[in-house]
Amino acid sequence: MTQARRIVIAGAGLAGLRAGEALRDGGFDGELTVIGDEPHPPYNRPPLSKQVLTGTMDPDRCRFPADRIQATWLLGTRAAALDRARRTILLHDGRQVPYDGLVIATGRRARPWPGRVPPLGVHTLRTVADSLALRRAVDPATRVAVLGAGFLGCEVAASLRTLGVATVTLIDIAPHPMPGLGPEIGARVAAMHAEHGVRLRLGTTVARFEGRRRVTALHMADGTRIPADVVLIALGSVPNTEWLAGSGLALHRGSVLCDTHCMAVGADRIAAAGDVAAWPHPRLSEPFQVEHWTNAGDMAKAAAANLLAAPAHRTPYTPVPTFWSDQYGAKIQSAGLFGHATRRTVVEDDPGSGRLVVEGDRDGELMGAVTVNRPRALIGYQRALAASPAPAA
Image (cartoon, rainbow, N blue to C red; front, side, top):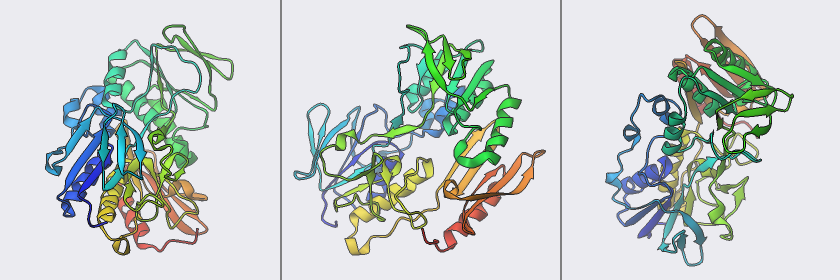
């Protein structure tokens, strides 16, 4: 699509910003518009569960420099509908924004609790406002329950203990924290949290919330009661794609379904990137999506480049996904498609130094690895995975 003069980026997060930068770097000198539902310009989200929450980083330091993309910013504005026939986006306030090319980067939002919750004391964490609200809600005497022991839940539990919150309970129906990384990593993470005073309630779930106006306790499925003044719901996320209803775009589990070039299937003028996109990977049998910081930026760059390119000159997006999590000074990192491995092998385990390396393979082919406090080892796995041919899915 080489003749576009008006490109719109729906989404003003990391993926939206990196897409804008890549468009300008790729020679696009036309009209660029960025639509974002938050009132803030693009900012870095990983510190929200760590440094911003603990008060060691001012939220203003999370902002990305964004001036060089020379865009019209429509912030505090939500995309409400997409009309592909007219090539326009309808905004929630009734305005219409025309486009020749579109990058969908609307991301995801926190998954809510499926049942009733009291209106006060129950939090999610996805935005800077969420992080600041949670920080204001706690003090050393606050009893906090974290529902969900994935990346976000574990990081928040660690941050709350760092803040000096005495009573932090981490709850998950899985038998160990960070269940997507397997029992070996889960056992190490559980031990870290227990050593730092977090109360672990694993293998059970919440039956109901107690409290009419403000939460006072959680009643568990096993019949126990956990007093709580504040509850963080950290149960994953859902894609922001409701505005695409009726557009004809294909979705995969709610995410925009793309081809290998990050182009929305059946829509040559529309690309998608980041948390909101799903695409085929040569090592997998079905499309998948990655909700991590590195992929948001990398996929946005690929999507923007392919949007500008003629179809015959587009480049497949075949990354080695990576992510990290910082908890109590330990750095947990992963490379590849570890969650799709059928066998895990511990290749290094040194509890004294905190080092741990677990490889994951499928039918003898390396799929990924997870490391704790072994950054050099992770780099080696990244290189090996990038260099190896993809096995048959």
